[in-house]
Length: 533
Image (cartoon, rainbow, N blue to C red):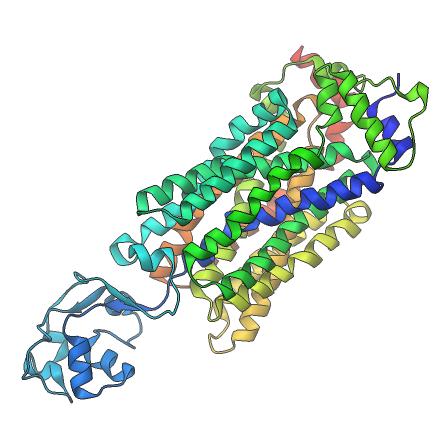
């Protein structure tokens, strides 16, 4: 009895039907980018200082320019190391006094500015921006700056929690049902974020979006790989991830045109409701239908694919079966990921690689958002380098292998972080160029880990191994915002030291990995299966 892969070889492994489905489902990867890193634009932090009641009237009376007003009324302005004072403290004086001098208004209170007491920004802040962000609307600065970190951490916490349940839904109720459900909830929560009346509701809707949005991306990925033949799956999966980069490029342009966070959030959320049209144009996975003993529906869908590709099924091919594999009858558990010394070693290394890759990838994006001189252009340039990163993987993975590109890309990412410590601030183009090189390196590493993870496990524990190891990516995403934004407040370059150190460790871990194909050999697979049984 022919298997589905046998039939795909006859009707087309990547023909007209698969190409159309590929183009349609890749939009899911594009739409996932604003959810994953949209906080860079939604929560950008403009220059700010305390609002001083009475200063505006005094400035008008004296005819000050904006620069003069700031110099006269903001403490610590222009003094290295006093950013916190200039942004989070103000002089504890009454600016409404009519006797204040226009040339030196603070002379009325003390002969030396350093003797004038300071107080907190009790009346709010003034932000130097023409647009708006979550930060400016909810005043997430100074003592409340950690609340911005929590917004991004909440979506990663949603990724982590959602990954535990979305896989079950996809296996129990079908890929298509899972896709449509998660798309609807993700789109709805995105719109609710845009109309959130307060900070608490914003965090709740952000968490809800995280719970399902990664599931919709994963469901699209699974559907796509199950429709194409074995010869094209690796390339299709890499290009599917490459479309995430398309989303990054598009996001930078939209954010530049729409500098208001609520309208930006609506703009990237409302179009995703169109994904509900997949109900009519994307069929259920025939592989899943076969696993559920729904052979008649599976044959009907395969026949539709054959007709679309112009290669009708012959009578002897209309009897489908799942691949004959005794390991499918086993019930894998987390213990199996640690059962033998070699698999235990791979599991621990992969968990660390996922964790550190996510920290570096998200960390570099957030670091650029926190320190960039031109946020939109710098984000755009750094996103573009992810395209050659994906192409490098496609053209080298079967020629060079996995271990050396993985180690080299990690090494490049770490070295770049350390080099950036010594680059002068006034040579901005050089700093952006070096950052782009590091971004390309860590992108190659992240995508390589995704491929290697699946190859390092036998069939019956492969899905479980990928789920458990990749969950460390979400754990890293929870803590990375706090690392980046809090450390940059102490010293702008401090996160780079941590990233460089983590990348050097990851390089050593990559070199410790053996050839990924070793664990998928028939001899080792059978040996492990006997231990489990």
